[in-house]
Length: 182
Image 1 (cartoon, rainbow, N blue to C red):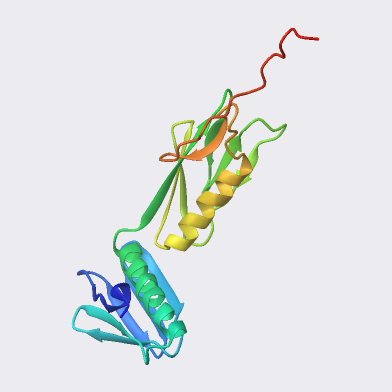
Image 2: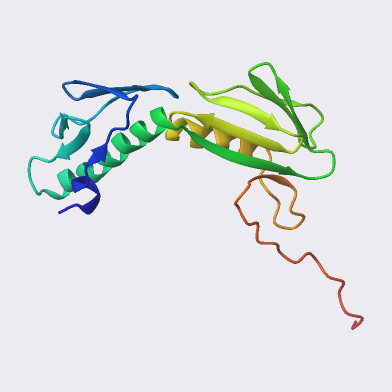
């Protein structure tokens, strides 16, 4: 039995859940999310508890069982509290500015990079060296943060670049002078 798939999902107050066949719509204070799940998974809403039931014990159905439950749980958490990722710019002259709903990032290129939000994400500049990506969809928040990090990946030799706030960059030793032996 899938331990993740068997766990029920408690729906907090203020969250509205609609089931339409295999399509689930969840609406809350942080936003609204709609997702279509595999038709073989039966999603049941009893009171304020969501549960996922699989049709049989085939390996592919067992895998879908846990996945479906995790995606549903992320939708509930995202609509009630939302998700956020914090990124940090490290480097001389590296900075970020708010430009309308998007951001303008200067990270050592000859031109500033404009970044626009994906889906219902919200981008905010926290000071000049921090970026906060927040939104109801965990998938969109993670994708947006990865795309921002990709603009200038952290360099393991100098440590410069855009990194997640909780990420640790393993530093490498640079070149050393060759000995005097000829």
